[in-house]
Image (cartoon, rainbow, N blue to C red; front, side):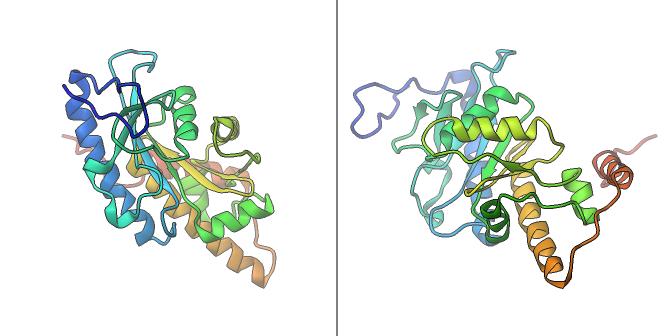
Length: 248
């Protein structure tokens, strides 16, 4: 199989293993389509934001897993499955002829340290990012928040882009929370999920509740939901809500 080499690189790419070819191609289709959801829900402007999805390999420790993510600086109108790039979980380019998103190191760190995560999303959505700029968690004052986030949407530490500092902050914060979303201080929201679609849903919900709670605070301090009720709502939504398998 012939692989592309990024412009200016003298090192040939490793290439996608044959046994992962079909899974990687399917992930490219999903990730490209899910990127269209970010501007549709007004979560990004210009070329900001990104969606990635893990492609699982045979190794039980996840060391041979890959991730599919959009290239850096590409317009949402130009995102296609063919434009997607593939990286290993150290952030090294495996397939593609463009540089990966500048947030790839953060995504890769999350996948390395949270094996249950199959999708990661980053946006700069207005209201969630405003809470991040204040360094303030979004308090759990809505049943929707209890359902989806299991409590407050927490704030992660300030970190600079370029290495895995952001990823470390995401992992350290979300390991102590049921929330699939974290507001990285002075930066914006990152969300996780069992797959990329679940992470996109969490990003949409994060912005919605951040906006609603902000509006509520203009009228006065909103009332928190009791922890016992949060726990009950979260358990129902995660385990009972929605379509259940038919039983005979």
